[in-house]
Length: 254
Image (cartoon, rainbow, N blue to C red):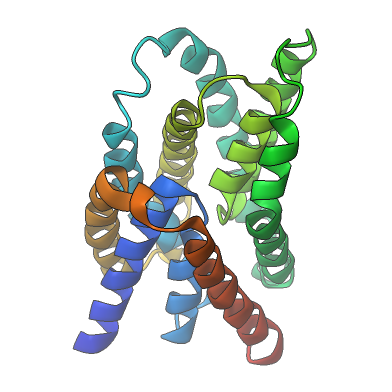
């Protein structure tokens, strides 16, 4: 990898760390960037997951004030994210690379739909939410488990999935829900990364991991402090544009 390629990957990591902290979907920046510079899809996914743990840590730490007093709720949800991440990572490791290559475009497409429709889903869910039905708790648990599986397998738009779920089933303030999202996404990424290091070390590009880790670490800090000032429509346009490029490259230029 050339010097300027390394700089581009690190900057993509910074953008991903920032967007993951604010919205989710940072993988839609780093993953296509790695593909552009010739990293294979499976190696890109595994290395990206390991590298983005650093950004998840700084992003979650940045929302610590919003999570004051929320330990009981997080203790109920964190084991489900952990279990889902294990299941998703195992699926990635046992399925052949050809299956992953075929599935990824569909996953990116789904992520883009969620990014575009996320505000409408949240606006719809915010109506008539004064009382919490009894089924909301179990439904949220199942949703967190499924989001963990998705995140352990690929990860793009995991944050969007979680925010849509929380917006529909919780009456907590949006910023607190974003704090939940950052903590649970960090658990999923960390668990998946650990499994990849142990069982898929041969797929890891450690230079890529280092570049994304450094970039995402800084991005998480930036996202937690100033990310809320970035207009959400601009972020969504950027994510959609990069995701479309990734889909085109995977389908027509493998």
